[in-house]
Amino acid sequence: MLHPKLVRGFQIVMVTVMMAVSVVALASTKHYTVTAPDGVTLAVQESGDPHGPAVVFVHGLLGSHLSWDAQMSSPELQRYRLITYDLRGHGLSGKPTNADAYTDGRHWADDLAAVIAASDARGPVLVGWSLGAAVITNYLAAYGDERIAGAVYVGGVIELRPELIAPHPDVYRDLASPDLKTHLDAERTFLTLCFEIQPDPITFQRLLANAALASPQMQTAVLSMTVASAEGLGSTHKPLMLLYGARDSLVNAEHSIARATALNPRIRSKLYAQAGHAPFIEESDRFDRDLSDFIDAANPR
Image (tube, rainbow, N blue to C red; front, side, top):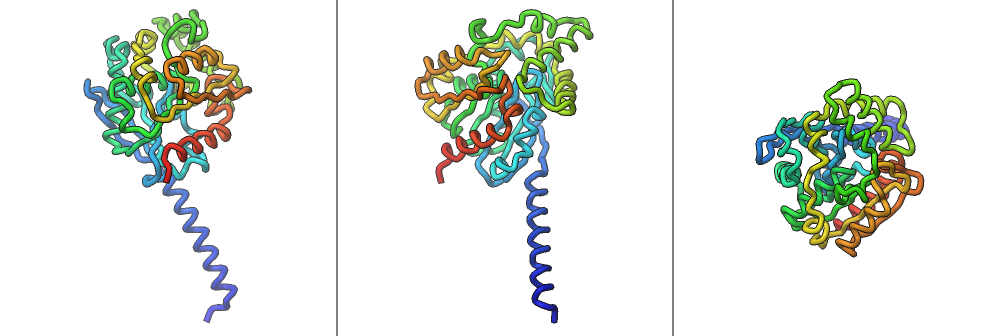
């Protein structure tokens, strides 16, 4: 017969192994594709707890699902079903060459609806960064809020209007340049402007390489994307929170909050005093806690 201390030690080892296996299982990522109504293929990824409350993350201009790496590996968020996808013209998703594929905001709304439907996400919380917030707004305008639990806008584009977007005309001009060196230098400048607190060099280089995957046609056309703000933000009755960095160099946080709350007085907002355009990267631990609190409140047990 084994000594009781050996039995107890064996039990502790087995519990530790099972916990490690559980963490690995949660950390594993599922990859698949979804086809949008206009035929564009969208790359989708899932991680976290497949049985937890669903969260759909929508990245911003020149990003991809890699923008959300800190959230995908966050211990705070592993109890949720974490769904990301690459926007049209970005990352591993399809890159149509016609301008209308990017200027018509309904296409972006249809993409998000297709991801929600194909993933069978029940009452997800939508999280949109920068341009991703405008995608959610167009989704709300086209599909309403019946299928979602709420939304969080991070450095969100409320409308593509000069008073809401910080002026960087040279950067946006050069993003559309046919000269490759000019174009790539503009992508580096744009990415640098995303952060008040710059990420570590490896993360920055990965995000920069990721930006280079974005479609040139998309970068030329997207600044003319329609955003149905009144119909989307103005009509939703589900919880909606705006999170901005007070030092955002790409979006005017104060004016954006004012415009959003004018459209919908029920909207809540929060400023991260030290962060720039990407609080979820710059202050990821704080962001993850705020997001977790929002998800739990939107999904009462």
